[in-house]
Length: 112
Image 1: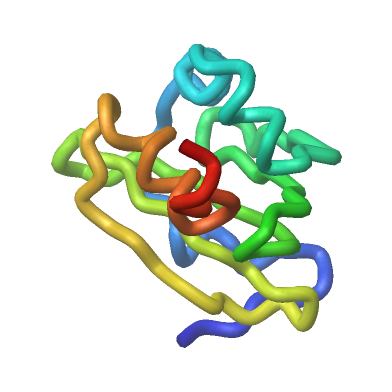
Image 2: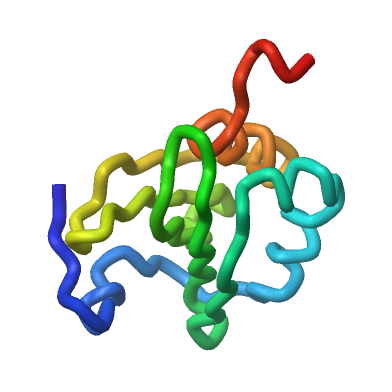
């Protein structure tokens, strides 16, 4: 997997196309309980190119980077403290984004 420099300056390698990051953030916040269960500490917008979330979840603690692909699906990357990509998920449709992220960040079967 790719390594990112300390300031994420080489994040451009992961960006495919511009999109409205605020619209994506609103989509992620539709179910507030799920969004806040991730322990979101910071939200960083990369000028219509990507969205960073600093999360403190059960399965993942660190950064999540979300981008829009050329085929109108989302991709997201779970980034470890050492700035390396721990997991890459592609071809996620907008209506699946929150659920897929939740499974990688926080979801536990016992929460039902």
